[in-house]
Amino acid sequence: MGFLSRIASILILLAAVFALPALGREPEKLVWPQEPAPPRVEFVRTFSRAADLGIGKGFFERLKDLLLGEAESRIVRPMAVVARSGIVYVADPGARGVHRFDTAAGSYALITAVDEAPLPSPVGLALGDGGEVYVADSRLGQVFVIRPSAKAAVPLRLDVKLTQPTGIAFDSASGRLYVADTAEHRIHIFERDGSLAGSIGRRGSGDGEFNYPTYLSRTPQGRLYVTDSLNFRVQVFDERGQFAAKFGRQGDGTGDAARQKGVAADRNGHVYVVDTLFHAFQIFDGTGRLLLPVGERGQEHGEFWLPTGIFIDDDDVIYIADSYNQRVQVFRYVGGAT
Image (cartoon, rainbow, N blue to C red):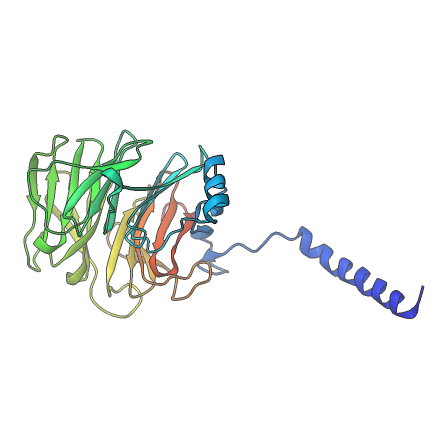
């Protein structure tokens, strides 16, 4: 064996030795807050396309790629997300539809309106109690429903003509649908048949009044959270639609509000508010006291660029529509009751 060959062999051996510890080392968990404080939130994953969730293409999709060239749908500008039983829906105006990632069945589809008509501005999503998903399209001024396994979103017939529907929430106890009409500064409540059950609010800054409300969240306990965006606060209503509380103020400090969007609550009663201009989400207790901010501007895991919607499932898994990073980030609350 020549001198150069022996040197090459030694270098390969050294590389293998130094690589051994790394092979057995678990990647460090990304958590908030940092040590020595106990972790409350941990990063789980991020996804932008079906393959990121382990969803492969079927035979006919692969055949189409072979004949016409490979094409892959991906998230372009996500605005809202919901998930249940391994199925994730992402509202995406950039793709002019709603992505359905079914990890259980291993399938993917981009849902549009009937006859493949685009959904130009799907910005709000809500889960129904039968597996259906409700979609608010702000440009069309309509609410649609996607039934389980359906290939198209069907418009709902509602008693009230909507101007700019954005946030949407479903109450499984009553079967009622709550829709924020941002341009009208009002929340409409609809029965299952589309008839109007009532409305909340008008333009103003008083309790129960709104200045461009956007996203909604309805808890199993009957509390309705509304991001009252240009009043820079979150308002809370009880099961009868009566004003119950509010928190938030305009500012550029931790706990303040700049441009609030998505809102959700976990099973411990913590309230999560996404702030687009802060590139973060903030966690509050039930009284509006700040508990923890998560995120900053960037493209790494746990960083955001103009995030919008948020969804929290029954296991406290947190989904964030990270709009201008063209992805959904997934976290988990691990801190227990506060």
